Length: 285
Ligand code: 13P
Image (cartoon, rainbow, N blue to C red; front, side, top):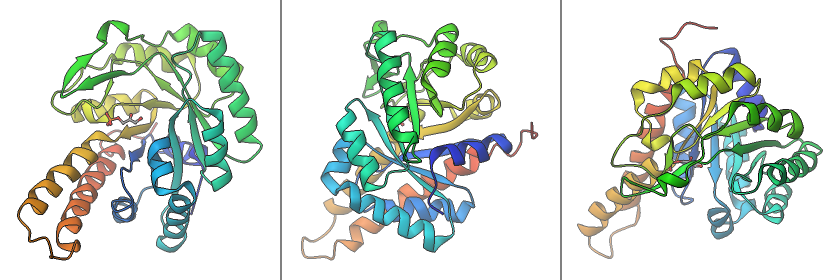
């Protein structure tokens, strides 16, 4: 079924697992991402940036997700990632996205609260879930951390105020992860996650999942992570496969010969991550 994020994180919470949230980078890879979830037998969150949504069309992405959710007997939520623009959030909700992120992490604390709260009011009236962000997620270029000094970790005390004032359904936390880190792995501050988890009762979200060590997954899930974002790993592998395939193919060969292997690579990664996200080895809460 087509669901919102809250329904999915409630499910994940009951089973002490995390929902996998994967950034789609083109329309080609989308069906195989959803098929991966069906094969593993777990829900999936598909997420897009505003730019990806605009390039493909919000309504086109919604149509594919809804159609596949209904026909494939798998639960799918469609989430707008890192929106800082209320108009884009309105466009996504109007088109049928079931979840949105308002990223006010660059704003002063009070303004982040006020703007996130406005998005929550708007979205909840329409049955749509909202993820907020407090603290910052670093960024990397080719595995080298940039603006490391500007990174702000989430303060547990602020998280309590933020969650109670805004009513968000999920909270993205700054605990040392970096977006776009695919050549190296980060050291996540698990002790900080534990502190945050002990004071707020809301599903927590990992951003920059590509740069997180797989051996850390279980500890993160056991400490409140209920949505785990992975984007760059899919992008890099799709592109690498495309380079290899297109580079070796005659120009008049059907595109299928090159694109199917790229999508299959993405499917393989999504299945692998979703299997780990079930947190099977860890006992139920
Ligand atoms: P990566 O692209 O680093 O995996 O991060 C994804 C993400 O957090 C999207 O918001």
